[in-house]
Length: 274
Image (cartoon, rainbow, N blue to C red; front, side, top):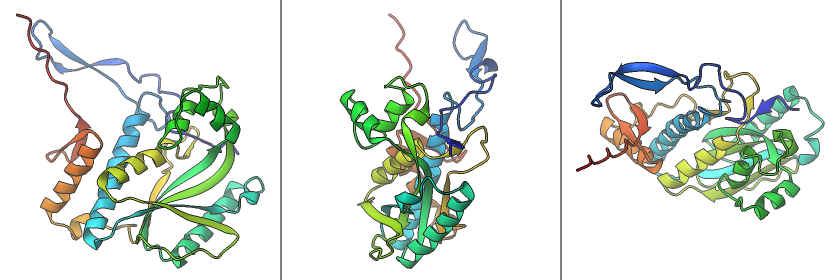
């Protein structure tokens, strides 16, 4: 039941954030430039935000490239087995259920998507108490309250209930109505802009399921046409570069074409004292 945790809610490696010499300093009076080691573990409280940012960038670029290629916009969809089954199945059973979900959403017309796996939902009583403390509904507000341990429960598991479900960022924008009473499928939004896609990706990754003490599992995955789809085969380098710049800008980051990576916006140097 508690095989999964959330990004950043585990432990850092012993060496994480320890100082290291990374080169010669350009600052007058300093001989060396000191930086911090990072373990880059999914569950590390120091590293998880950048882990999320890298995945948001990769997913959003692929979504926007596919949207550009098809002329369609993605939609936000959630799906799960009937809630009565949540406490009655093993994880092996859930995997089989998810394969059933994939077959179902394909029959509803979904051709391409990114999926995110969420093992838990916040208990309703916790939502009310978090709301009273100023943690807003929507975005990642309630989950920030869980991370902050705002109710001083001391454990993630006291805030949540087992409720495995999937979220899809899916194409096309229209899906057929679901008539299977054993499966819950709901479209709950259109992602009409780059900012919408970036915000939704960040929300989904903020509380996706990661295996405890195992950084090898991947809680997000392309399915359908997007599985193995390569934007470089369909877009020109200039078109793809433009998308990467716009996604990075929507994230408040910068995209470096030389390294093909995102980075923080450098801070303005302080003016020298007169």
